[in-house]
Amino acid sequence: MRSKSGFAPYLALITAVFQIVLSQGASYGQRAFRAPLDPWAYALLLVGPLMIALHRRYPVPTAVVTFVATFLYIGGGYPYGGVFIAPVVMLFQLVGRGRRPAAWILAGMSLAAFIAYAWMTRQPQRGLFHDLAVSSFILLTMAAAELARIARERRAQQQRAAEEESRRQASEERLVMAQELHDVLAHNISLIHVQASTALHLIDDHPEQARTALATIKAASKEVLGEMRSVLDVLREGAPRSPTAGLDRLDELIGRSGLEVELERTGSRPLPTSVERAAYRIVQESLTNAARHAPGSAVTVRLDYGEHELAIRVSDTGATGPAVLSGSGSGNGIPGMRERAAALGGSLVAGPAGTGFQVEALLPLPEETTP
Image 1 (cartoon, rainbow, N blue to C red):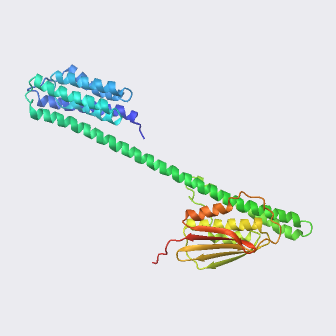
Image 2 (cartoon, rainbow, N blue to C red):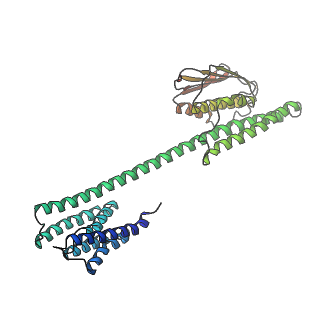
Image 3 (cartoon, one colour):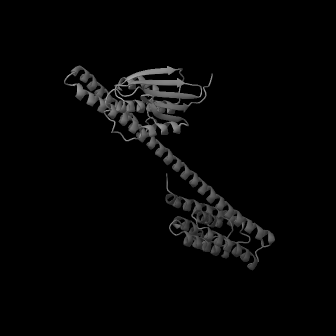
C-alpha cells in the first residue's frame, strides 16, 4: 500500500491542475470586475500545490505560506474560485495531523481577511449575505475536516482493537498449546518411565514380558512424537487451529497405557471439539496418575453421555506394587484437569475412593438439535 508521504506529490499535482483550470474558467466569467490572469497570478496559484508537496515535513510553515499566497492572489484582484482549493486541503491536513489550533487560527484569520477585503475595496458582492456565505464556507470546511479526523481516529481505534483481539487470541492459543504439550509429555514420558522400569526388572527372569514393555515404550515414543508434531503444527500457516486428540482415540490410549483398563460408555452423541479434547486429556491424565501411583491396579473408565453434560469417571482399585514414580511429577496434573473442566463451565473432583483413587468430571454439552 502506498504511504501517505508517497501520495503527497500526486495530491499536489491534482490541486495544481484544478486550481489553474478552475481559475481560468473563473477569469472568463469574472472578466468584468476582476483582473485577468498573468504570470504573477499563475505563480501564486502554484505556491499552494508546492506547499502541499512539502507539508508533511513542515506542516505549519507550509500552511502559512499557502494562505499568504492566497491573500496576495485575492488582494491582486484576480478571479475568485480555484485559488481556494489549496487552503482547504491545508486545513484538512492540519486537522488530520493533530495541528488543530493552527488550523482554526488560520481559518479565523481567513474569515476576517476576506470580509475585511470585501468592505475595504468596496467589492460589489459585499454585504451581510457575502459575510454569511464566507463564514458558512469556512465553518463547513472546518466541520468536514473535524469529521474526517474523527472518522480516521475511529478507524485507527478499531484497527488497534482488532489487533489487540488478535494478539489475545494468539496468546490463548499459545496457552492451549502449552497445556497440550504438558499433557502429551507428562502422559507418554511417565508411561515410558514405568515400562522401562518394568523391563529392567523383568529382563533377566521374564524376557518375554520385558519384550512387551519395550514394545510399549516404542509405541509410546512414536505416539509422543506424533502428538507433539500435531500440536506444533498449529504454528504453521494454514494448519488446523486446534489439536486433534478426541474420544475416538481412547482405545488406542488405553492399549498403550500398560494398565488393566475397562472402558464403559453409556449413550453416544456428537460432541464439540473442545469437549472431545478436554475429555480425552482428562482420561489421559487420570491414566497417567494411575500408572504413576497405582501400578497393577484395575482401572475403570466410564463415559455417560447425558442430555446436558458428559460425565467422566476414572477410578482405580489401588496399587498392587510399589509406585515407580510416586516421588516424581510436576504436581500440575489434577489442577490442569480442573482448569480444563472449568474452562468449559464444568467441574472436576479428584480424591481417594476406597482403596484406590477416583477422578470425576462433568462437562456441559449444548442441546442436541433435531433435524
